[in-house]
Length: 457
Image (cartoon, rainbow, N blue to C red; front, side):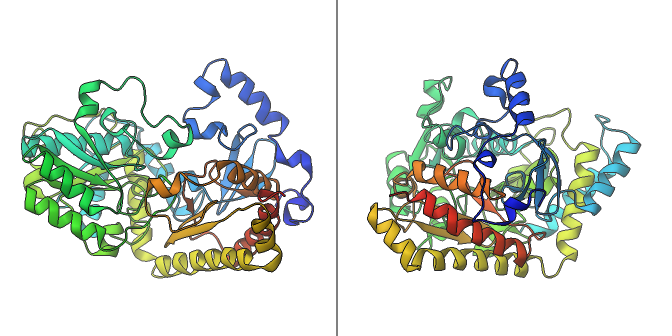
């Protein structure tokens, strides 16, 4: 790391707990022009205290801010960087594509190649449309589901976040939950009325909604592994029961795999759990770190999309040649890297078990007992979340009981020791292939000290 103090969790200078002078100066300039000084709310650090760091560069599993401080990164651009920052193969592909032209507004070979790769890897996808963001993908998939079924209502789950489309900002997770305002002003009452809410991991609640709104529900949309209230895995055959309910009621099942796609397995969570949705949304990894996303699914459903069908969706930069070059390089490397998922599983298990061991240490257990505190964690592959509350974490009702104050202390303590985490209790941490045992060791050393600070007596 750039600063030797960051390597020693016992020496975390107080000045490193705050944004450096260059970050502070940039924030002051940004606030005059950009709402809150950031272009996405969670980046503002309001849930954890202090000011955001402005980043300058990244390499492998480390990032460096504008003040020259280096950090082990567990955000990874919120999930896309499966092979770490500035992956040489992705960078080479982007450079070569940019030299040929940045945008044409016309079809390119790269779009076709990326579509072929997606269809080969993702079990449910027979046809696919490329778009620019995860939000655009989920909005479009929902429109297609409504067009294909002739129905208006959709079931989503409390605490799940599917982007900032109007229909999804009803009891949303992630950034909305972080700010305590999951129902956003500006969402029309009519739109809200067509969004039905169920509790994650509760199939009976879904069936009750189907009973009440028979023949009105177009789709059920779900994060197959929730990443937007922290990592919350499906339990008790939940996904299979959703599939059966949708089949019985003639509704479509949409898997939002913007976070899980290509990260939990080549075919995403649907491959991992053996459930085939009707539509799938993808983002993050599929674009190799560039603004690219996709939605796809059954051929008969996707044939509803214009110009083949009547459901309209378009985008000037959809299938952008630079973004598709990054996506093709990323998916090709995923296929070629035989130990990718075993390594991610091993690192995730090592980090998770190490945190469990810290929690069981007598001094830590005493410390938590003294303040009536608790911590628990969840993990699926390279998704890891440390919750400041007693488990199990099954749904939003469980997660929202966690102490955001203690998480904020932990976050600041980890940041002071050179570990960059997502600045919210309600986000997931991401491991990459670029992480190694050495980084896991440094992270656990830092966590031991930061947890003592989190559970202040």
